[in-house]
Image (cartoon, rainbow, N blue to C red; front, side, top):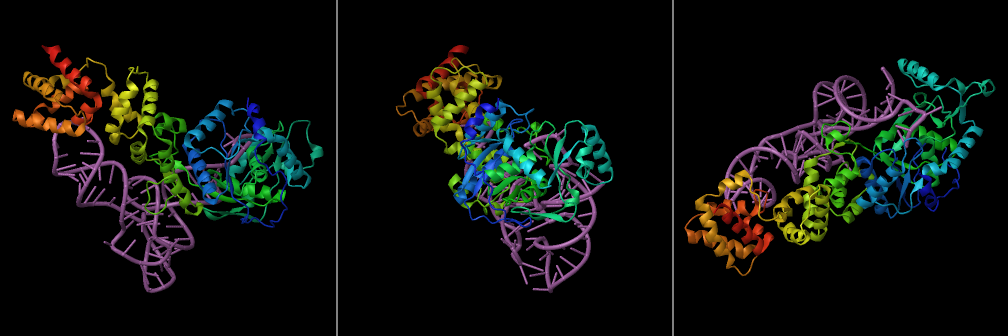
Amino acid sequence: MIESASSQARRAPLSAEARPASSTGISMSAPERPVVTRIAPSPTGSMHIGTARTALFNWLYARHTGGTYLLRIEDTDRERSTEANVQVILNGLRWLGLEPDAPPIFQAARADRHRQAVDDLLASGNAYKCWMTVEEVAAAREIARAEGRAIRSPWRDRDPAEAPDAPHVVRFKGPLDDETVVEDLVKGVVRFRNIDLDDLVLLRSDGAPTYNLAVVVDDHDMGITHVIRGDDHLNNTARQSLIYQALGWDLPVFAHLPMIHGEDGGKLSKRHGAQAVGEFEEMGYLPEALRNYLARLGWGHGDDELFSDDQAIAWFDVKDVVKAPARLDWNKLGHVNNHYLRQADDDRLATLVLEAMVRRGAEARADARARLTTVIPLVKEGAKTIKDLDDLCRFALANRPLVLDEKSASVLTEETQGRLGRLAAWLSEESDWSPEPLTARLRGFAQNEGVGLGKFGGALRAVLSGGAPAPDLASALTALGRTESLGRVEDALSRTK
RNA sequence: GCGCCCUUCGUCUAUCGGUUAGGACACCAGAUUUUCAAUCUGGGAAGACGGGUUCGACUCCCGUAGGGCGUGCCA
């Protein structure tokens, strides 16, 4: 299923030729070449919000440096990768506004190239065939763990001639002494003793390349200069560095981003409200708000909290990324989203609210869009999400006659009804049906009646909204329009008469 | 178990040896008041712990504790 998209993958830029090996040790290279970053998600599930932030940082850094930002789909796990998940990734990046600068590369489509690299490693003595069965590996792992050391295969030194007539994997043959130093842009210098690094599988017994091999070959071939990824990969980096070295390739610059945790500091999961990018969209967050919020999670520029993409691009630098993991704070996300909701074009918001209505199965009246366009600017200041906006607009989209909730109905006494009747007449004389004059009308009426607004405000609100959330009275009247407003008052009065 | 990473208000962060440790969200109080919200004003709130180095440490070093990640023929 994934092959269908792989043809276009080949059009993406690949500098297949290995550059001259120059690295004698494992050290951070300082490329003069233009920056090339990539986001490399795996289509084995939904697109995690952490992946979105990694994409954002890669995108920001590429834009900041005038470089290129690429996408590689890591689908080497043929069992779990699905075309549907590839679409989820593509849609998620598009929605976020983080589409790559070139068509995506599909890792599985490059298996031949990966196998070629393994042949080179085998030829140079940097890899070996291992005939351990999964059971043997499991047993060896248990022992190694009990002894507090890394697992080692006996086939590392054994003569292949002794091999049984059975499938084998190919493992990387890492050094047993010395150490590997990773110079990370975020974490600084990180040292690993090579003895602690196990010989990872390069080729599965069915000949399929594994992630750790493919990621090195592809990052190299794609000319990636900066590998910016989650710090759950920091441990892999040492072993991957060894592979780069064995292949005679220059290392890219590494930058490992801290993870995003849930509000309790634990791993972010469904229990924390959301995990997948698509859920954030459905909950009614704006992509520009998510970009802004995510940028502040693990990165900062002084006291700046709300900023545009252009500002983020101008300011962003990997070296300013925070080292500690961050927790997703829904309150702050809501605040940021509110900011962008206020700035957003009302037609766009109307479209989004309409979509939200469809999603919750509401039937929209014919003039819904027109009404939304009128109401949205009057209520959006109080909305943290499109869902909120939907709720806040509901009163305006209700059909007459309204069904009043208990509390609203109880406000309708003979006294208030009498006043509402006079108020309706008073309001109907208003020629300019907009907030300011209506507010003046309301005040004037109160004065005329010799009472405070409180004497009839609640009742008017009740018959206008039926109990649903609604903005201040003048805004509510404006939102509903003269006919609908007076009609609702009339409905309430006639019903009880 | 072993390895690696991390540790400033509840949360996100600023500080890059000398600050009354700043900002934002959240929270609390007050103002406003026609519900909720919004808005305005004010307030409480932090350097995990223990050792060093230094004239001076949130900033540097070591240790402890706590949290996270890795330890897959997953990525």
